[in-house]
Structure formats: C-alpha cells, structure tokens
Amino acid sequence: MITHLTGTLRAMALMAFLLGLLAPAAHAGSKDFGDYQVLWSVLPSTFLAPEVAQANNLQRSQSIGIVNIAIMRENEDGTLAPVTGQVEGKVTNNVQQVRFLAFRRIQEGDAVYFIAEYQYASGELMTFNVIARPTGAGDDFPVRFSHTLFND
Image (cartoon, one colour):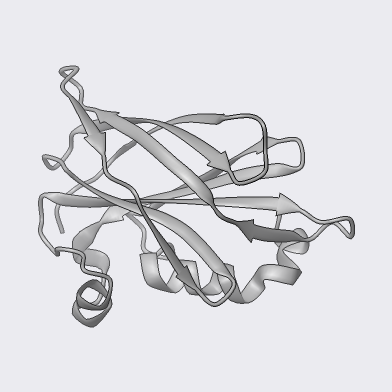
C-alpha cells in the first residue's frame, strides 16, 4: 500500500500526524472497493496534542475516542488521491448499545477526512458500521471493524 501512496504521501503523513497512528493503542485498516479504498483509524482522544484537539474542535478525555475515515480513489498511474463525499455510521458496544456517529468533514490541503467522536469505557469492544459515499460514485461502500481502547 505504501508504494501506491506516493501521490498522496503528504496527505497520509498529515493524517498520521493528526491522529497519532504511530501510537501503539491506535488501530488502522482499509478495505478495497475497486477503484476506491476506504481507510479508517481509531484512537483515544487523549493521544491528540492539546493544540491539535483545540484547532479541530475535538474534546480530549479518557472516555472519548476518535474515529477517522478517508476515502481514496486510485489514479491511472496506481497512486491514490483523496476524494470528498459523505460518511455516516454507528458504533455498538459489547452489550449492543448503539450510538450514531456525527462525522464532520475536514479538509487540509489535498487531505480530506471525516472525523467523529464517541464515548467508550476502557477495555470495551466497540464495533463500527460505517458507510462511505464518495462524490461521483454510484455506490455506497460499507465497512465494519472492531477495536478496543484502553485509558492511558
């Protein structure tokens, strides 16, 4: 995947910096949909530097997690480029309580991503069901992933 990101290395580096993907408790993944990929990351909000959280109007708390979704489209040369669109979803805890996620779009330069905050208890398994709708694509792209966060 890294070789395909050369055209968007700056955007991915920014996303990694912003969301602390290098931190051990963070979780990231992706799913292919033909010419598109949906990428996601999950981390405790306390992993964000206070100035980054404030600049993006995010609350830092030991009970708040951040989920980040990016939609990428493969170019003819094999590189990936971020695209805009809409993202909606919900998160379910291990006792089947459902919370809807309020995603908001953030664009910084070429980078486009969708961020939502959610509440969790330390050690609680959270299952995310997200639908990404890239602008110009006729299909919805559903992704499902699970992650457990622990308070730092």
